[in-house]
Length: 210
Image (tube, rainbow, N blue to C red; front, side):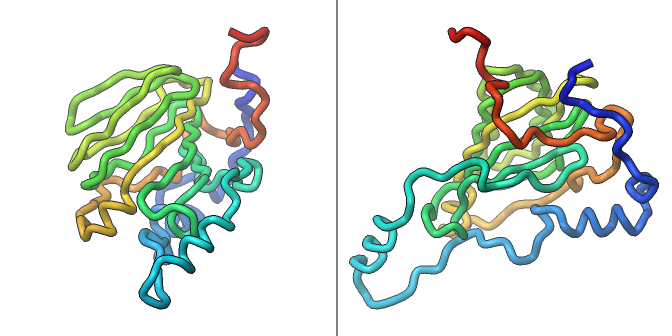
């Protein structure tokens, strides 16, 4: 059993598909928020000088510890950079942590996305076709693909760094996206008590170097 998986963390309110706790959890999921900023507004006088000055003053290195994981209990997200942060306008980068046995939401969108698998083993279902992956692989979600992500292990987590161009597509008014199945909010026996790894302690590098 992986020592990063701790059992016994579920409470009665977390269990059951019809509980008020699950409904509240579902409504608070990042993907269900009504105040998400997909494209950052740019306003002011008709020149780029002020915007360039603002961008040049923005820190170019962002500390991961400044962003905590959200969502769960199966899939956790840590959003590093997106348009609302005032730096980028055309891409969104986040870290996904999948609890043992986890499955993600099932959805489709116009934009592409790349998942660099940092650790663990799992698979994708893209338009009904299964694609297996493991640490070191890159999973590509192509345009207009209905997809879902799965952790194949029942006792170890998996992790992927995601870079996607959703903001640019929405900026160009390519708005189509659709959720087929919501991100799970139920506690399964495999993920019960699991918490995302907030601290980086060389999980993704071999001891002693390469």
